[in-house]
Length: 192
Image 1 (cartoon, helix red, strand yellow):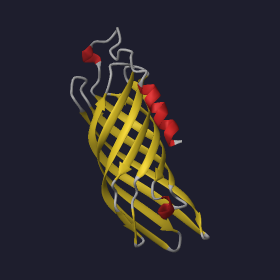
Image 2 (cartoon, one colour):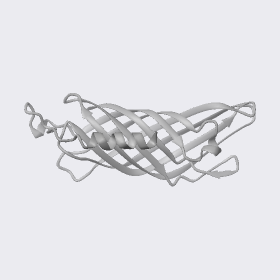
Image 3 (cartoon, helix red, strand yellow):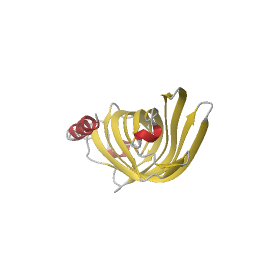
Image 4 (tube, one colour):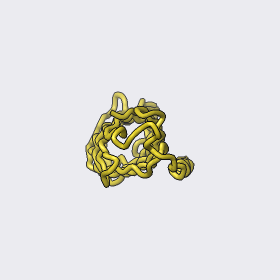
């Protein structure tokens, strides 16, 4: 699944050849700010520590500022994920929440445009077993992501995003673990 998503992102990125500034626009019409909504799935790397709540549904929102003529822009956002299951007769819940910020670069001048981003994330992970225990911990980690965005109109876009969080360090229930993840998401948003 991971390989298929990565290949799809690369294949879509290779299509970025159509001018981003359409015939009816000037460079001044290209908007510098974007608001994006993420919907997808997150798989925690330390599956055995979060089992059976390691494959989490996720949602997020992001603000981006990037001028077309700039070397890089910046992004800041909030994301969260959750899953639940049953283990040894107990209802189990796992969830994460994060605040992140970093740099971002949009490539090409097409309606289809690849994006790369990287930065720092403050992550909180929580694990609960109903009636038994609940614990959480926080960590700073790094993230990388790649996306392909499709401009549907001058103000609206859709896309796909693949994201990895690396280097988190947590202690939950007395167990040293992490909440590193691979995430696959559909993105939709609008330009301001």
